[in-house]
Length: 254
Ligand SMILES: NC(=O)c1ccc[n+]([C@@H]2O[C@H](COP(=O)([O-])OP(=O)(O)OC[C@H]3O[C@@H](n4cnc5c(N)ncnc54)[C@H](OP(=O)(O)O)[C@@H]3O)[C@@H](O)[C@H]2O)c1
Image: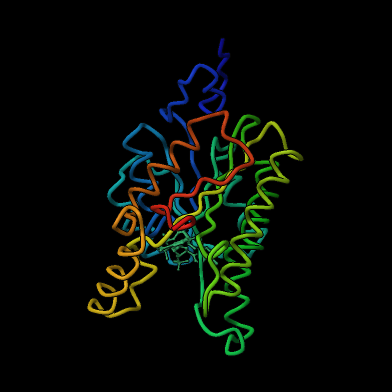
């Protein structure tokens, strides 16, 4: 039997639909975050979009009409701003962060600013969100972090990227126990065709994706919709908790 006081409490009977749920999405101005917002709204959810660039957030929000609770231009590293943004329309049923400001470069060449960007977006940022979730997330709500394949498959240039990714996976497991019954999960994407790779020329991007695809059992790189689909499954399923879902085309085991 399911007793429902909010959208986040559903799920024991498999009916964890997102209709009426409120979802706060950091990184909602591009890539997977934007795809999650669009897919969630199509399923009847209301979304709030956050990220540093108001222009990017506004462009995505414009396509989502009155399903958007608000757009918040903020840096995830700023704890009080994050807290204030969540307070405005909280409590939320789900909080998601896809935020990433990553630098792939040889370890000895990384600057403090580059390392700070990585720690802010994928270490302190998720910590700030989790602390805000203590107050602004429904009791049966969930938090979803995004890590990445570099957590398991380190290579030249991915040192700190891998470090912040693996740290998130440990954090989610700890919080699922400490902040129960709120759920904490992680999606670990493989290489996905998103704005992350916008810095590459179209030719280099095509070559890179083809090279990655040839080494994957799926024979292709991911789409942002692949990741969004998995993300919504994790939000909807009230029994997925304290775990990592690898949405990487088999990259971790290839
Ligand atoms: N794409 C891939 O191939 C891939 C592979 C493995 C893992 N992942 C992981 O999957 C997640 C989503 O990736 P994606 O491809 O969707 O990336 P994306 O399109 O680059 O989106 C990242 C978003 O994070 C926001 N952001 C960055 N730093 C922020 C900060 N300090 N505070 C608030 N917002 C911040 C950016 O917007 P602003 O710049 O406006 O703030 C941007 O909208 C990331 O965690 C990434 O590491 C991606």
